[in-house]
Length: 139
Image (tube, rainbow, N blue to C red; front, side, top):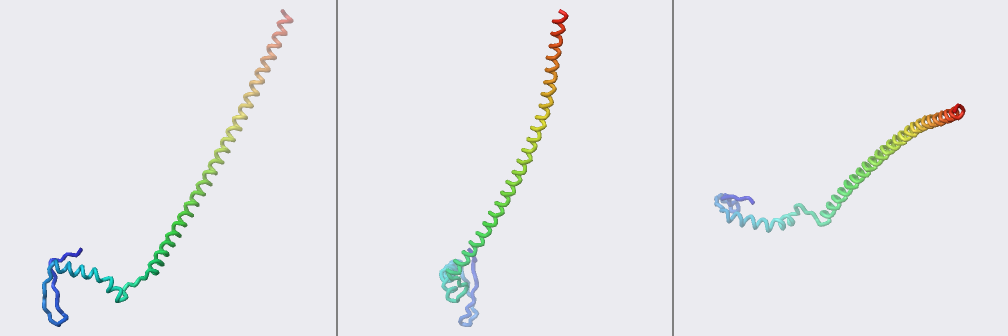
């Protein structure tokens, strides 16, 4: 609130240039009077006439603009989410391919190892058979 200690008013209604001092109490009374009548004065002079329809229309326009911004934001979030899922799918495919390759490599290694073990066991049985036969013959 604007507080003045005193103000000087000139009485121009009578053409006199008399100077009067106004104290704080009188200024507050003038301020209250202006506050209570300013709405009526603005309506009478057609200053800033906004009808309820114009206010409603402005608010509706504001809401529509806000809805459009929200929809665009949602579309952007959906697109970002979609890209994230596509990237995740690519990573899963790459990982599964890597796991499949490792499994195939391991299978190949195990097959080789199994073939070597089978050959060693077969050679061992053949050697035992030969030794048993020699023992029977010589023994």
